[in-house]
Image 1 (cartoon, rainbow, N blue to C red):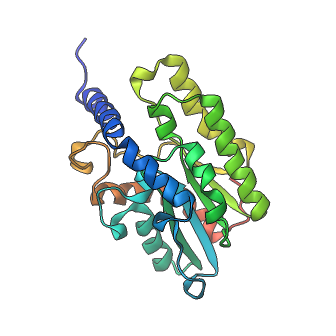
Image 2: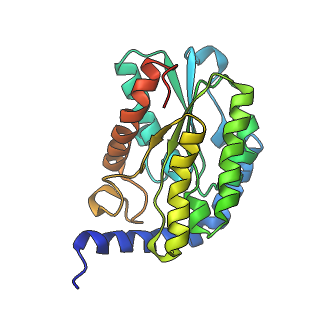
Length: 240
């Protein structure tokens, strides 16, 4: 049976993703630890500059915008849409390259020092790439939600789904991919089924590493996120 061009591109995308993880792992772990201690990646705008409400993106290099300018990452594109719609929200980019669910949990308390109204949770992909236990990942993600709601009871939740690499095995793939809709349902949150829909495995929309979106790719990711996020920002009380 002939392999389709799309399937072949997806296979190469995952291979590139795994290679990049192994090459950059040590540096990314160090950056994650710095952010957990209040390092530069976690710094929020000064209080006097904040909008009345905050949208916190907690995630990995995809959220951080690895390889593109800060203003080209999809959270910045979301901020542009918020301003165009004249909605009273400000985006905080809490993305750190290489971060796992455990890493996000470790640095969460620092980020929650500010008033947060909407949490967009984009974590788990690096857990999968390192073959970490799915049950532990689920516990970490749930703890992130629980701690966030303890600090800010009225917060709205958006969960960004991710797909697993095809070499992880059927059981791992199904368990991993089911974790995100389960988290959203359990916590009455909204779900982005696949953050990289329309971008993953497309060489025209990814950087030479084959895994991080180009500025054009980030625009598409922003479109995907905005479809889910906009109704919440217009009516924060709306259930997912």
